[in-house]
Image (tube, rainbow, N blue to C red; front, side, top):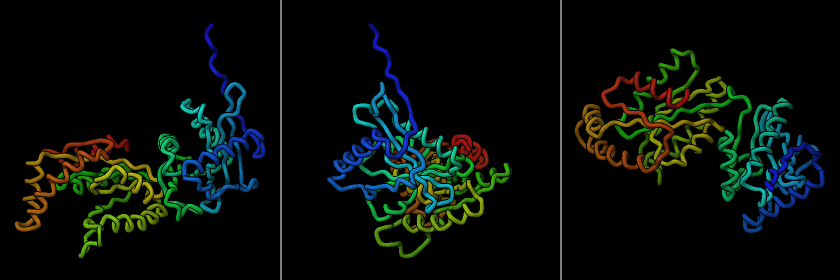
Length: 332
């Protein structure tokens, strides 16, 4: 006899529902075990702040839960996801995604605009779930600000509220600044409000900060200050020209722009082409020599980093043609 598939149901239940309460206790115990016995920063949640609670049953047994909390202290129309949990024996079936979708539906019904959440560096499966569902990195908030093991994410429930960042990546001489400027011109022609920044211009300091030879930390701090202004002024599209040497920098840019959707498009050109451009651009001397050496070194670094969503060649191509391709592969 063929076994019947399990019956999966999703329920909205009160905060004090017995099954939901038991699952929350199990969730807290698991977190303590993962973090060397350290308890949750918020072990008790105020019931009056909880907007909704979701329970998933498989063949009648409660196996997964999650809650939605009002979060007006962080922003008007914001909510916070809490107590997301699936019993170990029921994992790998997509049940956490069912809980997440139901909580998002409830948030939309209640007129919320944004959801935020905190998880931890020792919960890669949770991070994977949220990222795959469109949540993007933000700065640590509230009780988690000084907690190094915490990572925080957010998602705007309306796509037009999300800031979109296009990073034009590439080695020295690949054409990043020229193409980013061309992308900005095309956006203007399309009537898309935007900002564009040559991030290298934010790093022109001497001497370089201690331990930061390319002033990357300084650039991020400056961008973070600018990001709020761009958003307040209504610029939801931001084009940046900057080398992206590490895959982890994607989340750093997401957080800098408060949960932005980041696309990284790398420009490539043959070594011969890059060296010809640099020779024409840089005056003879130490600066030219450094750039000629750096373009070879950096191309290898970018190959190994694999930080890109797409790659576009610039060899013997007009900047506007390259910019069209960049926008296309970035789905802008």
